[in-house]
Amino acid sequence: MNSKIFCLEGEWHTNDLRDQSTVETYLRFLKETFGIDYLYRKVNTREAFFKYLEQLGRYSKGRYKDYSIIYLAFHGDKKKLWLDEIDAVEIDELSEIKSTPLLNRIVHFGSCRTLKMNVEDLEEFWISSQAKAVSGFSRNIDFMEASLFDIAYLHKLCSLKHTGKIFNFMNNKFKRLSNDLGFVYIDKNNPKD
Image 1 (tube, helix red, strand yellow):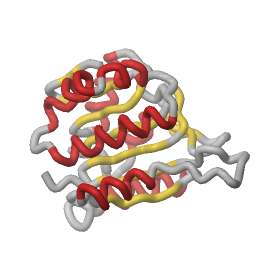
Image 2 (image 1 turned 30 degrees about the vertical axis):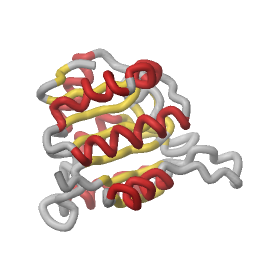
Image 3 (image 1 turned 60 degrees about the horizontal axis):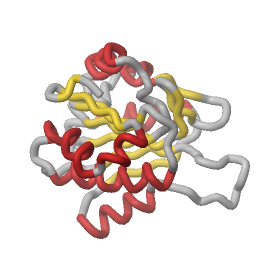
Image 4 (image 1 turned 90 degrees about the vertical axis):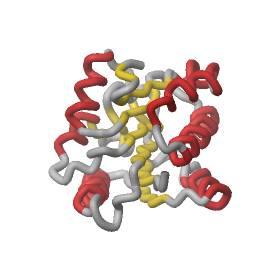
């Protein structure tokens, strides 16, 4: 599989300008070690967030066709991503983007509690977004633990020809971490958390 990763990341610590926390560090690791290409943008406004997703969708059959994984790394809460300390995006808004950037892509929410919802709401978002799969966390997460999990998860997603067994693989191989983070995954083979 020639999967590539499209990543949008928010600010982690806006009240400490010295903080340089970023997921781009391990995206670089995946590229340098395993040859997994990625596009990365730091965003903290709704305008930038939706602009980049709109562009991804608009050119999804052309220059961005191999970017089959969308990785959204933000502070989160139930059904939302925090762009900064004030602005948030409800995940349902992603289904409303005209260029359908989630269409047939795997969308991973690398954020606390974003997928803390009942199974019916998760299935409704998955179906309305037209994503191939949706994954993320339902609990408050530790940045380091989530980073370790995400590195393994993104690597596995990019190396598998068929992602239908990824949920079972991650839950078996990284059982404790998966449970601690509240890992959730839905696709046509795994219609539940």
